[in-house]
Image 1 (cartoon, one colour):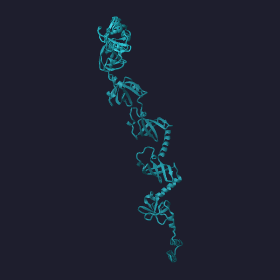
Image 2 (cartoon, helix red, strand yellow):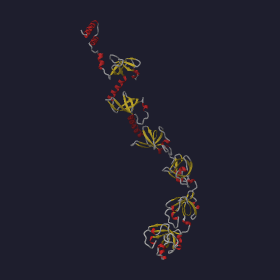
Image 3 (cartoon, one colour):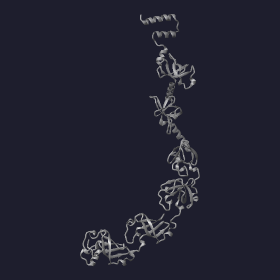
Image 4 (spheres, one colour):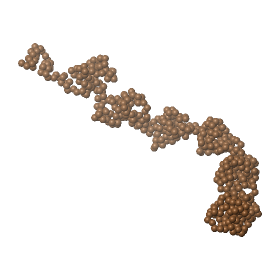
Length: 570
C-alpha cells in the first residue's frame, strides 16, 4: 500500500471517531488530499501592490498589527499613522500589500503606500494638467523640491517662485497650493508649479491695482530693486518706478545714497500707463519745489554762501540751500589764472562765497562765480595802460597770427605779426620771438569789455616807408644781403631793414638757368633802385642796370659776396 493510501486510511479512521462540522470536515479532507484551503487560496491570489481593508488587532512598540483576513496578520509601521486618532483596536483601515511574507514570516503592509495609491487614483480620476492641488514641501532634490500632495510630486527650481531664490531650505516643511503641470501615467509621476499660481495672482492683482490707483494718489511700496537710474517698488502686487530725478530736489549720484533694499516708502503716483502696465512714482513731489520763486530769491549779483557738494571736470557744484545747487564753472573761478581743474581752487565740503551770475528756472540751473568776489584787474586797465604807453612784458604763448604777453596776472595783450616790423615780412612770430622772451612794446588799443589789448613792437621806431622816396630814390645804389631765392628772383635785406626784390630778369645781363647761378642766400650784393611803391611797401632792384650803368662788360664787375665794388667775382 502506498503512503498516500495509508494516509487516506488513517484519515478515514479519524473521521469515523471524531465529529466535525461539514465545513471543518471538508477543509480537513482537502488538507489530507493536498488541496489548498480557502485561506491559502486567497493568499496565493493576492499580489504585492494591492490595497486591502483590515482591522487593527494589536498595537506594539513600533508596529500596528492588522488583520486583513489572510492566514496571518500583517505589520504596519506605527510611524505611518499621521492621524493618531486611528490608533484604536478594531479600527478599520486601508493598507497596501507590500510583501506577502516578510523576513519573520509576517505579511508586510503599508498604510502610507495605500494613502499614496489612493491619492494617485484620485489624481488620475479627478485631476488633469492645470488642476490645483495642495501639498507640503518635504525635501530638496537635484533641480528642485519634492512635494507631498498625497503622493510625491516634483517641483522644479524654476517653478518654485516668481523671484530669485537664494536658499531652497526655507521652503521645506511649508504648505502651499500648486498647479499640476504634467502627469506621466506610465512613470506614475507628477510635475507641479507654484510660480504659475503666483504669476496669475500677480497679474490679477496688478490689473486690480491699476484700475484703482489714480495720478496724485499717495501709496506705500517696498523697495525690491535698486538700479543706477532709480528704484522699483512693489505696490501691492505691481511694480512702480521711482526715477532718480524724482527722489529728491537735491543732486544725488546713485539711488542707494538715500534708499535701501526692503525699505518701505510712501510715494506719490505721477503717471499710470494702464496699457503697458507702468506706474511712475515720485518722492520729492511730496515736498514743495524749492525752485519756485528762485529768480526772486537769487537775482543776478546776489552774494551767496554754500558747501561744495560735487567736483566735475568743468567746475564745482555748491549747495546754497537744501535742494538748490549752483554751478561754478572753471572759467568763473579766477581772473588771473587759467583753471583746468576745479580742485586747484576749491575742495569737497568746503564753504565758499560766490556771486549769482544767472538763473535758468526751467532748466533747474544757477550759474555762480567765485572770481566776482575778488577785484577784477580789467576794471582799471584803461587807466593803467593808456594808448601810446611803452610797456615791457614776457611772451606767454605764440600763435599763427601773433604772440600773447602777460602785462600783469590776469591781463594779457596781443602783438599781431603785422605789428612786429615795419620792414620785414614775417609769416610766423616764431621767426622773431620765443616763449619767455622779455619784449618792449607800445599800447595800441584797449577794449575793457572784450578784455583785449593790442600791442606793437614796430611802433617803437619810425616807419622807414614814410620817407622812402627821399632816403632811397629811384636810381640810387643800395647794398644788402640775399635772404631768400625763388624761381622768379631774390629777396635782399637792405641796411635800413627793408626787404627788396631783384627780379630774375634784373639779375644779370647774361643768359643763365637758375637764380642760384647768379646769387645765393647770404651773398652780399650792390644793386640799383629801379622802382618804389610806398603804398604797397615794395622796392624793386636791378643788378643788371647797375652793371650797365658802370659800363662793365665782364662778370668781374658784379659785386657778389663783397660790398667793395672792386672785389673779384665769386
